[in-house]
Image (cartoon, rainbow, N blue to C red; front, side):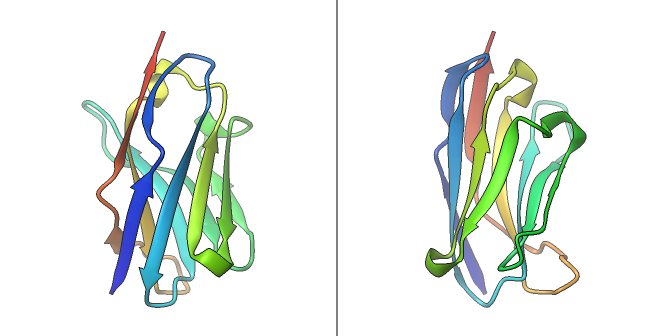
Length: 117
Protein backbone atom coordinates (compact mmCIF):
# COMPACT_ATOMS: atom_id res chain seq x y z
CA UNK A 1 0.00 0.00 0.00
CA UNK A 2 0.90 3.64 -0.44
CA UNK A 3 -0.38 6.40 1.83
CA UNK A 4 -0.63 9.93 0.49
CA UNK A 5 -1.51 13.05 2.46
CA UNK A 6 -1.86 16.42 0.75
CA UNK A 7 -1.63 19.84 2.32
CA UNK A 8 -1.20 23.46 1.32
CA UNK A 9 -4.45 24.25 -0.42
CA UNK A 10 -6.40 27.41 0.27
CA UNK A 11 -8.01 30.50 -1.18
CA UNK A 12 -6.03 33.12 -3.06
CA UNK A 13 -6.68 35.95 -5.47
CA UNK A 14 -5.76 35.68 -9.11
CA UNK A 15 -2.05 36.19 -9.61
CA UNK A 16 -1.23 34.70 -6.23
CA UNK A 17 0.77 31.60 -5.36
CA UNK A 18 0.32 28.42 -3.37
CA UNK A 19 2.57 25.48 -2.64
CA UNK A 20 1.00 22.06 -2.29
CA UNK A 21 2.75 19.24 -0.48
CA UNK A 22 2.18 15.50 -0.69
CA UNK A 23 3.66 13.30 1.98
CA UNK A 24 4.04 9.72 0.77
CA UNK A 25 4.82 6.49 2.59
CA UNK A 26 4.59 2.77 1.96
CA UNK A 27 5.68 0.88 -1.14
CA UNK A 28 8.40 2.24 -3.38
CA UNK A 29 6.99 4.83 -5.77
CA UNK A 30 8.32 5.22 -9.30
CA UNK A 31 6.12 8.09 -10.35
CA UNK A 32 4.25 10.80 -8.50
CA UNK A 33 1.80 13.31 -9.82
CA UNK A 34 -0.75 15.99 -9.16
CA UNK A 35 -4.19 15.79 -10.70
CA UNK A 36 -7.18 18.08 -10.32
CA UNK A 37 -10.93 17.89 -10.65
CA UNK A 38 -13.16 20.94 -10.76
CA UNK A 39 -16.83 21.69 -11.05
CA UNK A 40 -18.19 19.91 -14.10
CA UNK A 41 -14.76 18.75 -15.18
CA UNK A 42 -13.20 15.34 -15.37
CA UNK A 43 -10.02 14.72 -13.43
CA UNK A 44 -7.03 15.97 -15.38
CA UNK A 45 -3.32 15.57 -15.03
CA UNK A 46 -1.54 18.71 -13.85
CA UNK A 47 2.07 17.61 -13.41
CA UNK A 48 4.04 14.41 -12.92
CA UNK A 49 7.55 13.47 -11.93
CA UNK A 50 9.65 10.32 -12.16
CA UNK A 51 10.84 9.70 -8.61
CA UNK A 52 14.58 10.01 -8.27
CA UNK A 53 15.02 10.88 -11.92
CA UNK A 54 13.53 14.33 -12.01
CA UNK A 55 11.79 13.89 -15.35
CA UNK A 56 8.68 16.06 -15.29
CA UNK A 57 5.62 16.61 -17.42
CA UNK A 58 3.04 19.38 -17.29
CA UNK A 59 -0.38 20.07 -18.67
CA UNK A 60 -0.22 22.75 -21.35
CA UNK A 61 -2.25 25.26 -19.37
CA UNK A 62 0.08 25.21 -16.37
CA UNK A 63 3.43 25.23 -18.15
CA UNK A 64 5.51 28.16 -17.01
CA UNK A 65 3.33 28.72 -13.95
CA UNK A 66 3.48 25.45 -11.98
CA UNK A 67 6.51 23.46 -10.93
CA UNK A 68 6.62 19.94 -9.50
CA UNK A 69 9.54 18.84 -7.38
CA UNK A 70 10.47 16.11 -4.94
CA UNK A 71 12.32 15.62 -1.70
CA UNK A 72 12.98 11.95 -2.13
CA UNK A 73 14.69 11.58 1.24
CA UNK A 74 11.49 12.66 2.98
CA UNK A 75 9.06 11.08 0.55
CA UNK A 76 7.48 14.42 -0.27
CA UNK A 77 6.38 15.88 -3.58
CA UNK A 78 5.57 19.54 -4.03
CA UNK A 79 3.57 21.57 -6.51
CA UNK A 80 4.53 25.22 -6.62
CA UNK A 81 1.73 27.16 -8.27
CA UNK A 82 2.39 30.74 -9.36
CA UNK A 83 0.27 33.27 -11.22
CA UNK A 84 -2.86 31.38 -10.29
CA UNK A 85 -5.99 31.90 -12.36
CA UNK A 86 -9.67 31.38 -11.47
CA UNK A 87 -9.74 28.40 -13.83
CA UNK A 88 -7.16 26.70 -11.60
CA UNK A 89 -9.86 26.36 -8.95
CA UNK A 90 -10.21 22.64 -8.23
CA UNK A 91 -9.61 19.83 -5.80
CA UNK A 92 -5.99 18.80 -6.22
CA UNK A 93 -5.08 15.18 -5.62
CA UNK A 94 -1.68 13.63 -5.19
CA UNK A 95 -1.19 10.28 -6.91
CA UNK A 96 1.46 7.60 -6.91
CA UNK A 97 2.50 4.71 -9.08
CA UNK A 98 4.39 1.65 -7.88
CA UNK A 99 4.74 0.58 -11.50
CA UNK A 100 7.61 1.86 -13.61
CA UNK A 101 5.21 2.64 -16.43
CA UNK A 102 3.43 5.21 -14.23
CA UNK A 103 0.01 3.72 -13.66
CA UNK A 104 -1.46 5.87 -10.93
CA UNK A 105 -3.49 3.69 -8.64
CA UNK A 106 -2.86 5.30 -5.27
CA UNK A 107 -4.59 8.57 -4.48
CA UNK A 108 -4.74 11.07 -1.69
CA UNK A 109 -7.97 12.65 -0.45
CA UNK A 110 -7.15 15.97 -2.02
CA UNK A 111 -6.72 19.58 -1.03
CA UNK A 112 -8.96 22.38 -2.28
CA UNK A 113 -7.54 25.33 -4.21
CA UNK A 114 -9.82 28.29 -4.82
CA UNK A 115 -8.73 31.26 -6.91
CA UNK A 116 -10.89 34.36 -6.97
CA UNK A 117 -10.79 37.05 -9.63
